Image (cartoon, rainbow, N blue to C red; front, side, top):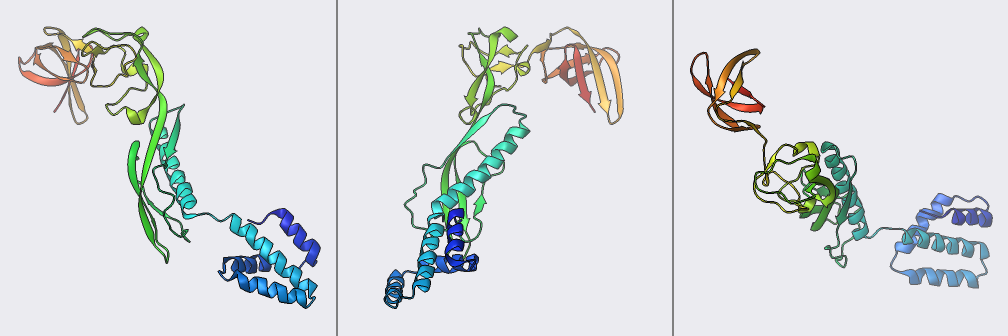
Length: 286
């Protein structure tokens, strides 16, 4: 992009001559390998005292240098395109996760910038995985113009937000209460075993084993809440299509939220299996 001051100087010197034409010609001359030709031409013109034409060539040369100085290298082009694509995917991921506060980082420092490629004359083709993978991965980037090239670019994508952590140790089978947990900023790329984003997702559940303070909670460390005990009277809801029937029953074993248990229908004396959906509530699907 040419600077406004260059354009103003051009009009002052050459009295409104077509600026766009000199831009194109200037770029052509600068990209030419034989700059000696330009120097020889300028020398001859100077000898001939053709001052106006000499000034024209000087302006073309300066404006061309200005344009050349702002051109992107292949590395800058790749870095800009890939980061832009990944940033859009991260923001989409954060939206799907309903994150209100978050930030992220995209690292391409493992890419060797000393590789010798030509800048691509068309938009780069970026084959990013769907859905986006956090952490380290390789993404294929290709230039498909007349001088094609392709690279598997090593990338590292990090997403930071608050997750649920313990603020004190817990013993095995301890019921998790609000006072036991806090929200703490973590890098989700490092939490391979999972995490919880809201306190309500863990309150009422139980620890599977003894846990230390500052532990990031995940489904491998806690159990669903125990909602039914063996021998409890339960209400069985049986669904079949749009029809729903309720009947009293008895739990034949303990039941945690979302888990299957055996129950006895007190009316028919039949033993069936159903899913625990709440305290004293079992759902059966036919």
